[in-house]
Length: 179
Image (cartoon, rainbow, N blue to C red; front, side, top):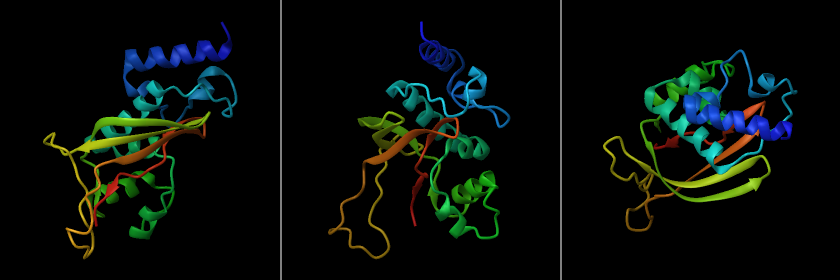
């Protein structure tokens, strides 16, 4: 069995045995350092692995585990910095806490139905999903900022990208923002 197949098997077994944290290394390690390879080694990105990462992201946001959510997030944090210029760029935990508690990001939404998955590259997958409110009802993002209700349809589908970067799989989109 090839080294990459063994690694993937270990990762997938770890996911099923240990839950989402098996995909997400603690701050002192990385998935690649566990295999002895450099952090440019990328295991195969399967839909199952990508979905586990996305579920871990939503679970961390729902639980208020902002450090964990920040570790899973690998996208552009510029909007969070613009809302919170007093928070240092490297304090991702504080940026996520402020986003969820103060800035209007909806961190209590739950992952709903997976409508579609698209392979963006060998190292990235995109999911189109629905989201649910905390009570389990479907979430819709309505018109914003003076838009007339009749002219704008509510947004019911959301896209999240999971990609291999910096030695682990990460979600590239922030939580839904509701101004």
